[in-house]
Length: 132
Image 1: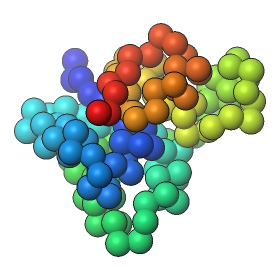
Image 2: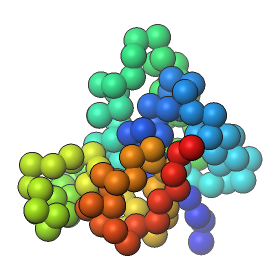
Image 3: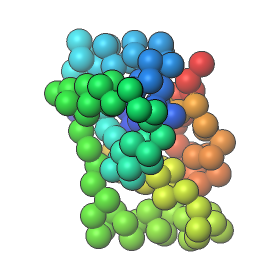
Image 4: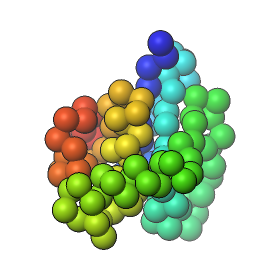
């Protein structure tokens, strides 16, 4: 089985802006070791809104890597994400975070994040790889 990591908004923005040496090292390792980096499409939407002008190249590089895969937010996934939010008691909560939790559950992979508290309030059982 191929292993991987699920990247959340903080990881994608950190790589794209060059503000996270940890994520840069993770991406290089993923390329060398064939580790899959999953980006939920809701994360893509949120990150694209947060990445400052002038940092689009880093974002494009990450999305174009052969080790990067997008997890879509199709009908089935959207319903599962909604159920995560409803079950958390925060039905108007962060859709990107809930999509990350759903992807981590589905794949059985850790989440790379700088904001673990947000994710752990949605599911305390997911594995977290904290950004330093």
